[in-house]
Image (cartoon, rainbow, N blue to C red; front, side, top):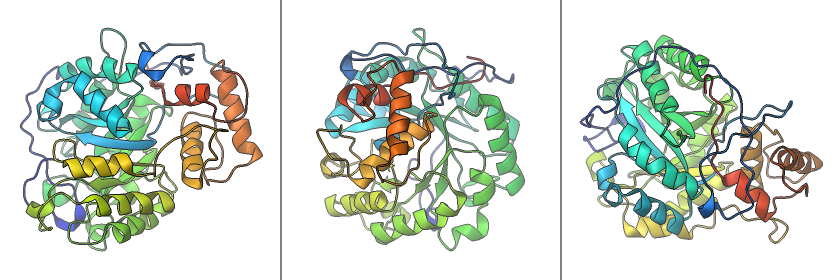
Length: 395
């Protein structure tokens, strides 16, 4: 996601594939395994140890967590807080981030992120920060792209940590990606077959502008994924109209939409110079939550200005308070509904309190061995936001 000049119709700024290949061995075999319970946790998130494997309840089967709250995308670790995991997590906490996206590889570089993940994952998880991997498949060799994704997904630190989910950043043909309907279908289906139904997969896609929908097979790209992360970089347009239209256009696929906003200098992409200011970033966040998003994130950590960081921190949207101390607004309740549903405790995701919401919370509390209160109390919030191993076939 580093700038390489103008990219047509709202794609990511291009990503130079210059990173070294580290731990690049690919995995061709299908994985097999079982679901996991969330860890029992009553202590503060900062004191949470490595993910805990608990017995699986007979029903419902648990799944991995999709993102909620505020996130940030990371491309070159050395350019992010000097690549220091403690500094990264400290800033994440200061801003109020719940998750980070970390690039793990591409068709040109292979899987290269093992060394960084080995250092980051234990620190992030011990402090309640979920880490999602992302990869740039060119789809010239779909089998290789699937195998590389599996290498990132199944990478495990010596103390048992893995990434919490995976996003494929599938770009336009103009960026050299062979994103035909057949290739997109094969890639998504192959990835889903490898990881199983319980593992969180996110399709990162260009903003669906009128020009984009003529050349990009959205239906085939997103069909096997759990959520859609459109790249909403408004450049010389308006952030509100861009995110509202993106969510409306992608809503027909019936999947959660978690927009990515602009926190980089868009001058190279024919936008006005400079990182967007506070007003634009907060307008984007407000519109996204109002129109149903349960998470937002920004491209990118290394490009964001201090004003952008402050705007993300100060925005009242995409925060997750507890009940009953606070009456949740529609956006906050919708985020919890979305998280519970993604974890395998389904309820309507509509921002409306109902008996079914209380029942889903109670079912989660029983599965996590928490006091059954039927509300998001402090102990329940801690466990909901604590990273644990996503169910992955074979592990």
